[in-house]
Length: 341
Ligand SMILES: Cc1cc2nc3c(=O)[nH]c(=O)nc-3n(C[C@H](O)[C@H](O)[C@H](O)COP(=O)(O)O)c2cc1C
Image 1: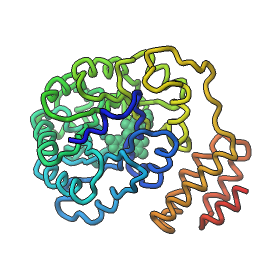
Image 2: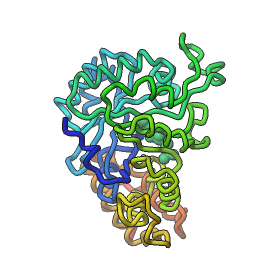
Image 3: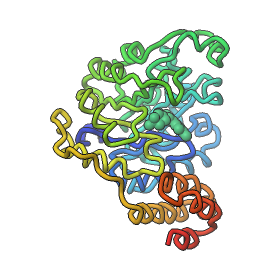
Image 4: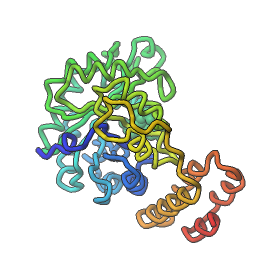
């Protein structure tokens, strides 16, 4: 197995998977600005099983995004097995990830994503189905836990074997399986996307599986925040960054600069001042680069999709409100360039 995870210097900084956001253009931009690994948007194994064309289009990638991991979600081991073969043979990414962390209703109520965490036997079958059908390194993405209280009145209550589970128990009960890496979103199912991030549990997980890669995820939005975590929990192999990269794909390189020497997170950072954000002229270049990439990849539909990114890029800069009005109406890359002049 060509396990790219073991070859990346620590701390590993990954662009975490985000449906509707981590498309090829955004992955390229983040990789260009310091992300060590990129994840696809989550792809349905059942869609790949029954009608793969559209989903194959969703996970298509450019070699500049490597190392690139395709994330799969679903709840049927046999669909995971077939989807893994298809992805391995047709897409040829560097790794395959399994989504055990998504709390979104439409995923959860079908017993996928985070709803699988309490169903250990099924989760084990799914991990085995993926590992048995590829030579690529397999990773999993989990949450800090799913607690009993949320089962009442939530879609989880519909699951026959709904019960409490913490990420520690999940890892204890799956650690014998041959997956290579785990990204732990340190919030519970109930914590959604804004609750407390439990970094202790992430650090404890690494102690249970020292031979596997463990990335911590949740709430990293600044180089200072990243460094604080990496220094406080030096056994964690790296970080997954999701919303922190919105409008700031350069956050990855900022963290690296701030950490100064990758791999030396056990020592105090040599650079005492946090790096300044790039000036606006640099950000404009990134915006244009991003717009060109997305247009190349998705044509005019891409221009519709770039709008949210453009708004994130300018957030907080003087005159952002006025600029936003113009940018969201732009209908070509040329027009975006003209506005940014
Ligand atoms: C818009 C959006 C889409 C997401 N899509 C996925 C997904 O497809 N797969 C997944 O495992 N997590 C997904 N996540 C969760 C993120 O990967 C990440 O775990 C979460 O946002 C916490 O990280 P953050 O605090 O850095 O944003 C998504 C999050 C957001 C905000």
